[in-house]
Length: 161
Image (cartoon, rainbow, N blue to C red):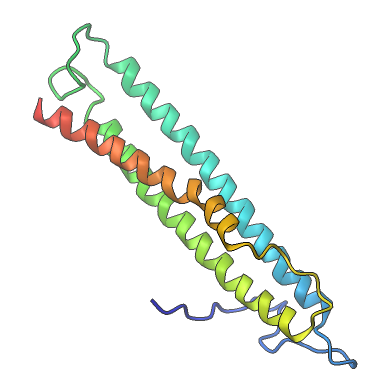
C-alpha cells in the first residue's frame, strides 16, 4: 500500500521554507501541527456522532420491538426491523471510512512534521511512542467494526427467524 503525498494547503509551501540560519520556518511547522490537531478533533467528533447514532438506533429498535416473546426482531414482529439494522450498518461503514481517512491524513501530516524535525532538531517533537498511538487509535477504528458485526448479527438473526 503506497501512501501518495497529500496536497498541501496554500498556507504551507511544498518546499519547507528555511530561515537565514538554515532552520525550518516555525509558521510552517505550526501549520502542520494545527492540521494534525484538526484531524484528531474531527476523529473525536466523528466517533461521538457515531456512538450517539448507534445508541439512538439501538433504542429505536428495542422500543419498536414490543412483543413479549424472546424471538429476535424480524419482519413478522417488528415494523422497524429491516430498516434500523440497515441504517446502523450503513452508519458503521461510513464512519469507519471517515475515521480511516482521518488516520491516513494524520499519518501523512506526521510524516511531514517528522521531516521538518529531522531538518531542524530545535523544533519541538510530538509523541513518538508507536504503541501508545496504536492503542489510542484502537477504539476509533474498532468500535465501528464491532457495531458492524453486532448489527449484522441482528439483521441475519431476524431474517432467519
